[in-house]
Length: 220
Ligand code: C5P
Image (cartoon, rainbow, N blue to C red; front, top):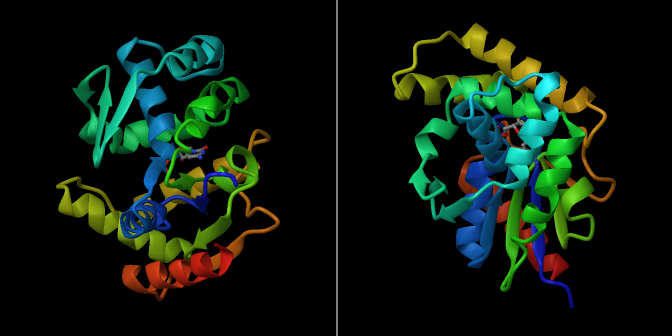
């Protein structure tokens, strides 16, 4: 049969990355953090001196097609350079969400994402893993949490990194990003028809992992 794929899609700061990484670890599977590819594209544009605007769509899509990326556990290498920290900034997150709205960039990254599907299996997290990239996935989970919960988590993360911001600013930014992800015509953020919904507003990471693993056992 096909190589198993477990998709975790959901809005910004819903905890997809944490959940996906834990599941990949538990199952001994590969992990695709698809958001990192959009962030890498934004970073590559920044380094090439290209402004993230409509007029640069084709030039930035060309950068996406030529991405020289390697994932080493938690580390992301761009042309051999560790750019893990550069990818996580708010500015790159905003630019990533802009380039992600362009069909040419999404098309450029499609095959690269599918190439992550290797034995023994893959856990993939993002916005369109279940709807576009892996429509035949074994299990699709749509992870949500209230905007306030998500803003609070992201706020704490930023503060602990020494970034100075306010909860209101974080909430506003997160809502703007959600709106852009949901309203774009190319692969908008929405649950696949056959996705199982998981609201983790009041769940610990461990409880979320156990819930998804139970679903996974039923599917295999
Ligand atoms: O998940 P993360 O915040 O790293 O993703 C960065 C941006 O990339 C998101 O705001 C979203 O607009 C975009 N993205 C996407 N499709 C994915 C993953 C991320 O459009 N599968």
